[in-house]
Length: 450
Ligand code: PHE
Image 1 (cartoon, protein in one colour):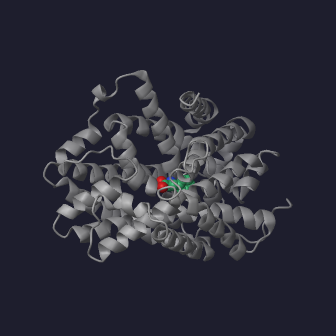
Image 2 (cartoon, rainbow, N blue to C red):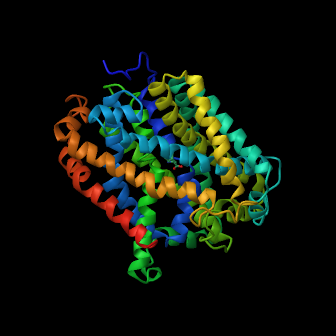
Image 3 (cartoon, rainbow, N blue to C red):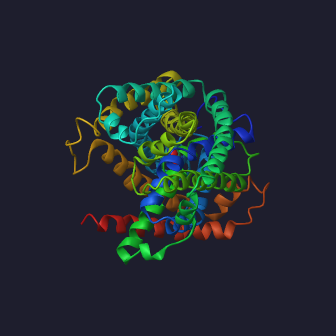
């Protein structure tokens, strides 16, 4: 027996619970907060088209690979990669480190969302300018982000089936229902049509040269990785709590569908209201905090709608951040023999500390730069630009070249139980298309820095 074998491991209690948890990890701030604004700055429909292309050719093979590697290993991300090929634990190690980096800034945004939720729920919609004012404060954002982290810690402490699965099975369906309601409302606002057009009808005049197109491609690929939680060891970890009854290829399809659907619905909620109010969609990271609150502020019962909206964002954020903590917790408890309590406390404490400079990046530390970046930007850079593509690339090599088609087929089909019809396509994508694409986009991003 392997020296890292675990005696008793938790498992998902139902297939539905697993899908809700994995889709809950994928659906997060990336869909509601980030997608509308990167789409807004990246030219609308052209971005959407490139995004969907990457979901199919990168998202499908990599997500499926992560689940297969996880289930095969029945262990944390590092051990699971090692079980495929000795010496390859680092492929999962990128994920564990990357999860910490994402957590370090995700919690800052989670804290902002909590603040906005409570402010709106208490009857006040903050003014659009309030975002820059609030985010630059020193103490209050630190308090909210710490509360956010502690809630996460409590859920993960309860365990996989009793904590993560229970919470995700309630929050994700609620999120989907509420978001559809809000989208319908947003689409009925006068002038919303412009936003829909911007989102769905490609306007090539916005792309003036190759450089711009390359930027859209880099941004879309990064967004696919981030939104689907790829290259972070998260889905390896979640896959490890599955048994052979699960149909991996079908589950992958469902997770991709839910994540993309929620990104599109968010686009159709945020952008039409922004246009309806005559505002600009390229506001950047503050889009939902400043532009959208401007929209809520002008509506009758805007604070109710605002509170509703920020509650949704909070649900989405929570089901993702718990998956980041679980990735680290599984690693610490299985590799270092820590109790679950300790293995949760360590990443929670690290997140509390690391997110302090992230929050202060918007205030007193805004001039404190490392390699020309604030702490917040540095975390984003390390996780989104370096670790996610690197982790994804290594995984393609590990599964496509070292594990081989026979083995991936066996795992994905649960030993022949579920015929894997896309086997040929999958193995071509994971061996050639995905790694080459990741490498090209990775280097084209760095060309800007040279
Ligand atoms: N996918 C999450 C989102 O869209 C973020 C995330 C990335 C979660 C990586 C886990 C791992 O917000």
